[in-house]
Each structure stands twice: as structure tokens, then as C-alpha cells.
Amino acid sequence: MADAALSISLRQSGPIPLDASISSDAGSVMALVGPSGSGKTTILRTVAGLYRPRHGRVVVNGQVWLDTERGIDVPPHLRRVGLVFQNYALFPHMTALANVMTALGHLPAEARRSRALALLDRVNLAGFEGRKPAALSGGQQQRVAVARALARDPDVLLLDEPFSAVDKVTRQRLYVELRELTLSLALPILFVTHDFDEAARVAGRMCLIDQGRVIQTGTPREVLARPASVRAAALVDLKNVFSARVSRADPSRIWLDWAGRSIEAHAPEGFSGIAPGQAVSWAIPATQVLISRTDMTVADETPNRFAAMISDLVHLSESVSVKVRLDGPDRPELSMTLPAHYARRTGLVAGSAVTIALMPDGIHLMMDA
Amino acid sequence: MDWIALALSLRLAALTVLILMPVGIWIGRWLAFSDFRGKGVVEAALALPLVLPPTVIGYYLLVGFGVASPIGEVWFRLFGRGLVFSFEGLLLASVIVNLPFAIQPMQRAFEAIPRDVREAGAVSGLSPWQVLARIDLPLAWPGIVTGLVLTFAHTLGEFGVVLMVGGSIPGETRTVAIAIYDRVQAFDNAGAGAMSLLLLALSLLALSITYGLSARVGKRHG
Image 1 (cartoon, one colour):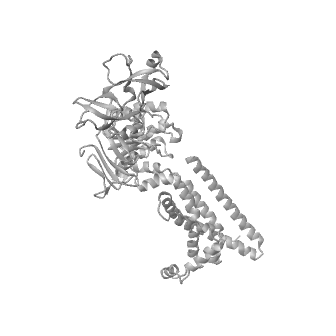
Image 2 (tube, chains in turn orange, cyan):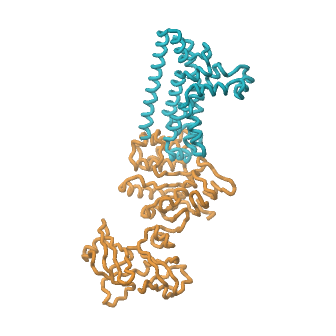
Image 3 (cartoon, chains in turn orange, yellow):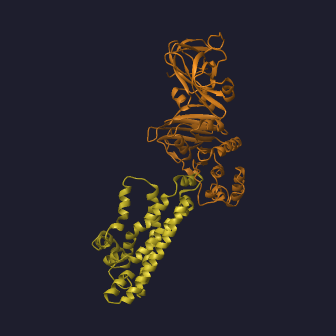
């Protein structure tokens, strides 16, 4: 952690509760994800020096920007930080060029203009340098904001929900551009969003934040498919979360008793000391619930097969979102996502009787029941 | 036309504007950007001249400026003359009475600047002084000019406070507004009419400027 390009640790009980330690390497994009009010923007503002927590330490490339124990708090204008605000916060009375030049105070006066033009060119805004923000579209304003943030020649780049104010089509294009841009930058990038898809598209690592606390850190894939707790599963909107008891375990597999049904799951790494009778929670992503080819009367090697009935079926653009209800006293409902062509070919409708299969490697165990 | 009174009024208005420009910017910006316990009381105190009868303000200033008061005593020791019935006393009274006219439009203009725009200035490497010069003042200038124009016009027209604190000493404290009153008392309606028309024209001009500028502020942030 001491060697990371950026390390943050914050702690306070109020007014905004914070308990977070985050570190990020140069060249990597870390997404801070969580519901609104979770404190992710406050973490970003602390790095920029716009917010001062009760207890905190921010170290960037070995320079201490904030250390409340030692009374160090470098003011924002002396921190080399590029910040793209949620609503861009462009200077409304300045042209795009002047906006970028304002952040070039560290260069000699005669070098600023050409550097600013080069930065605007880099974000595909050549030719727009004379326009004021009001005469630019949302996507163009976002690019000016990115160019201005880069103009500072920052040690860390901070992006606060940079896509929230542009339309969906523009957003798709900006994802690609931002991804290309971040690949060419050798500095840590923190990216705040409440959109998990967005985080997965742009960031290499993801930090799940809830009420000011980091509750899980990992690749977007890990965090989204393997949440560390039931709370994390709820935050990442993992649909199928259930309680069960461990009935049997061997080094590679675990069998669960799910209200009388037996479920086989792969034992996760580092999941040791699990004992029969222990209460656990388990979850399965909607994409890992499959429709079995054969019904329950046919003997099949496939584990975790259950008879079910389709209770709801919604056609989306490329997939079909299906809810199935299982037999049994608890009548649990599971969400699954099927390819659109599969649902069409098999003629599934609400009310169809099906047999579903839960992929053992898709089943994810959480110790808090 | 009492040219001496007119010159005195213009000098008084110009000096009041000159003093209230930095004072108004400083207080207006402070009230716009900070939040503290008792802010409402401070704002109310600064707005008092808007609602109090000028004679009441004049009375308190008269008492406060007198040689028996601490302010008057310090002034007397420093300059060897009293504040009451002097141009300096009149100027000080004018500054106090005009505080709300100068501060309120400036405060509103500073408040209209989005917080993140000012923060973006700091994050872009601008020191607090540079944020003032390159972001706050360029964005708030219509409000600042409005405050100063209102101050100028209001000083030309102030009557009650001037009469209470300054009296009517030609060349020292007799302003145009007082001179008009004197002319009417002396049945010189022509003289009073000429000066009244001048004040009417100046007030109309000042208000036209402020309305024009506030439309500008609305457009910029709207």
C-alpha cells in the first residue's frame, strides 16, 4: 500500500460517515461504486482537497497531501489533481481554449496556448476552441472538462460521474474514448459512478462503497458475480440470493440443503473451515440459470435440476428476462436471462412448465446468512 | 441651481462608492460563500437602513459620532475636529446607510456562481486571489456594478440622515437634496425644480442601468 501511486485512508463518524482505505496504481482505473449518498464523491473530494475528513491520510507518489494526525493539508490549488466534475463546472465566461489554458498556470505564458490546443485536439475538439460552454453540446462540454483536467498535468485523475449528464448514444462513444485515453495515461484514475455496467466498461478495478465504507474491492467481474456479503449482493443488484445450510463438504465441492432441495456448488478458494449445519447465503447470477433440455423424469448427469413454472417473461432488445417459480413449500422465485433467439425457438411463454438447472460454478457462497 | 451643493453631492456619492466597492465585495462575498451561526442576524443588521426611518438612523449616528461618544472622541483626538456637522461625518454616515444597497446585489451575484465552478478554479491551480480575480469578479460584475450604481443614486437623494448628521452647511454638508428643501423654504420654486429634475434624471438613469445589468445576470446563469 505504501508503494501504490495513490493511497487514501479516511475515517470519521460524522457528518458523513467514512471508513475507507483505497489504493490504486499508476495506469489503472479504479471505479468507486455505490448508491447515492454512499460517500463516494466525498472520497473524491477529499483527494482533491475540497473536503477535509476528521481523520485521514492521502499520499500521492510519495507526497503527503493530507495527514490529519500531522496537521498536513495541502490546499487544492497546490495539489496536482485533475478533476472532472459531474456537471463539468466549466468556467461559463471563458472559451473552451481559455478554460483549458486556466489550468496551465504551471507552464510559461507563451507555451500555454499551443499546449491547450494540443489537449483540445486530443479530446477531438479541434476547431471548437473559440466556443463558450453554452455553445457546446453536453458531450463536447465533457471533453473540455477532460482536457482541462489533463492540462493540470495531474498526479491523479478524478472523474465524478462524468457520463451522467450526456445522452445514452453519446455515452457509448465517450466510454470508448475514455478507455483509450486512460490506456495512454500513466497515472492512477479514480472514477465515481453508481452504474455497474459503466464501471465494468471503464475500470479495471472496482471498489464497492456503502455508507462510507469499502465493502469489497476487486475486478468488476469478481465484485459483480462474487459479492463478498449479502449486502454487497444487494448493492450490485444480484437477483437470486437465498439462504441455505451446509449439508456436506469436500475440498472441491459443497452440498447445500436449500429448504429440502440439495444443491451442489464449487467450493470457492479460501473458503475453509466450513462445517455441516452452518447457515450460509448463496447467490447465482441470472445468466447462470439455464433451461434444461430434459425434464425431471429423465435421468441426467446435470446437477441442480428443478421443476419450475415460468411466472413472468419480458422481451428485451437482445435477451429475454424470465422469472421462474420452483415447486416446494417455500415456492422460491429465480430470475434468469435467456438469449432472445432461444426463447423464440422454444416458444416459452408465461405459464410454461420447464426444468431449470443451476450451474454449480455459478453458485456463489456468502458466509453471512 | 446650487452648483456648490451639486459638487458636494457628487463628491460625497463618488467617495461613498469608492469606499463601498471593496467593502461591499468583501462582505458580499463572505456572506455568499460562508455559512455560520448568526448569519441571519448579521444580514438583518446590514439591511436595517432599508427599513428604519432615516431620522432614526440619523439620530443614532448623531449620538454615536458626538464628541462624548468613543468614535467621536477618537476622531477628535486624531483630527482635532468633530465628526458631527462635518463632511467626513457625512461620508461615514453615507457609507453606513448605503451598506445594504451595495452589499445585497453583490451578495446575490456571488451566490449565483455555482460552487463547483469556483472549486474547479482551485483544482485547476488558481490561488484564492486568482479565483477572485478570474472567476468571482468576472461572473459577479453585473451585481457589483448594480450595487455601486444604486449606492451612487441613493447617496445623491439621501435627505433625512444628511440633515440629522450634517445639517446644512454650504460647501461642507449641504447636498443637493438639502438645497432643494432650502430653495422651497425660500419660495424659489424655479431653483428647486431645476435640481429636482436633475435628481430625477440621474435616478432614472441609475435604475435603467441596474435593470439592464440584472437582465444580463439572469441570462448568464439562466
